[in-house]
Image (cartoon, rainbow, N blue to C red; front, top):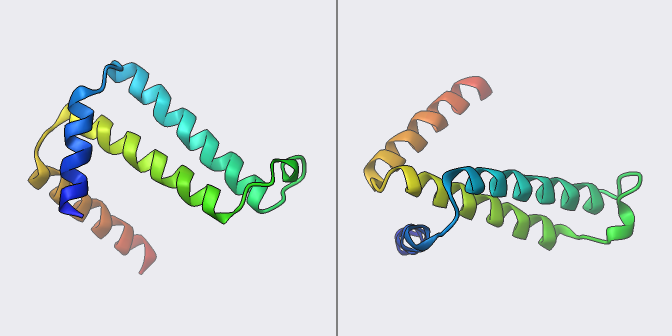
Length: 97
């Protein structure tokens, strides 16, 4: 996993999109994830797309890649990323318990 994070960091350094464009791209990918979920669940008006579970997973990965690229545009610190993830996980865990 560490090598994948380094690869994402390297790719984000070469990304030509502005911060604003990356934010919009993230929103686009989230929308595509939602479309895939609706199609997978055969929600009214969406079944015709015939998207399956693999499509949902792929769209989730697109969201993660863009989100991480956006993060690395703002910070190159792996330690900071890990600390923020731990902080958010703790907050999530407190809500679940």
